[in-house]
Image (cartoon, rainbow, N blue to C red; front, side, top):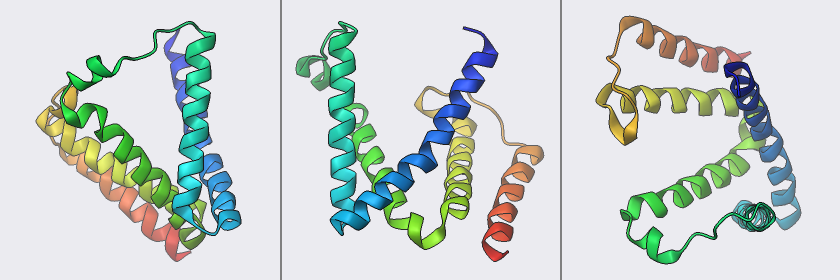
Amino acid sequence: MTQGVYLLMAIVAGACLPLQVGVNSSLARGLENPISAALVSFAVGTMALFAYVLMMRLPIPGFARAAAMPWWIWIGGGFLGAYFVSSAIYLAPRLGATVLFMTIITGQLLFALLLESKGLMGFPERSLSAGRFAGIALMIAGVYLTRRF
C-alpha cells in the first residue's frame, strides 16, 4: 500500500473515534452508567474481532504465548483502552466533542513527545526542540480557545 492509503486509513480511524464516543455516550444514557456502556462496547468489539479471526482463518492467540510476555504488554493495552473508552463516554456530554478530542489529541501529543524524547516503548529517539514545544503550545492554546469560544 502507498503512503497516501496509510494516511487515509489514519484519517478514517480518527473519524471513527468521535462516532464511537457518540454511540457509546448514547448507550451510557440508555444504560444509565458509562462503565456499563464501556463493558458492552468492549464485549461487542471482542466478538467482532473473534469473528474476524475466524473468517480470516488467523491463528487464535494462545494464553501460554501471551503469559510469556511482560505483564504490561498483555494487560496494559486492555486497561488503557478501558480507561480511554470509559473516560471518553463520561466526558463527552460534559465537554462536547470538539473540546474533548482536542484535549485528547493534546494529551496524546504530549505523551508521544515524552516517549520519543527517551526512545521508550520501541519508538525511535527524537530530541526535544523549540519547534516541537511550539507545536504543543499551539495545541494547548487551541484547546483553550475552543473551550472559551
